[in-house]
Length: 177
Image 1: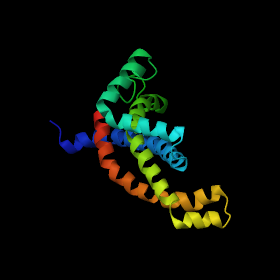
Image 2 (image 1 turned 60 degrees about the horizontal axis):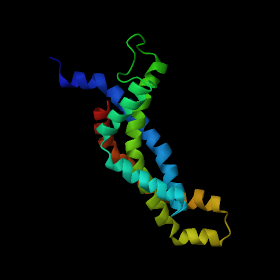
Image 3 (image 1 turned 30 degrees about the vertical axis):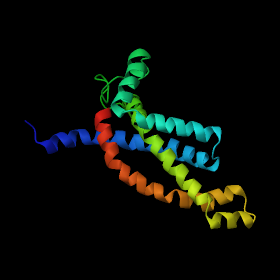
């Protein structure tokens, strides 16, 4: 017998915390892996990241969440299986972090493959541009070429992808929660 707005207002902070944490995990892992994979095309890391990207893209989020809870919460007892806080520790930030890690990792793991593939493709596209060839021909060190010329241009499309993926990530976080 509560209005929907009241119910949403109660659970929205937890959903946003989970969504933002998962997005940060996905970006911190996915973007550097995609850049590395793009810079070293057809290397072992590139092939392995492609395999795992396709593998984790094919797994439904709810199934991965169930498997993660079973192994890491029930079997190994590394993380709590449910809730946002233990009943005896309401508001404890360390306890909240323990409860946040497993769902954020699962949700982030579902987003990492897309960021790896988008970043890799963007890096490969930018590497073929004339200004990269020109920067190398001018004698700039490879690190400077990558930092000043390649990354700003390769990561520009990723900003759009991040924005477009937020609604889907919020919907997935409701399932993971």
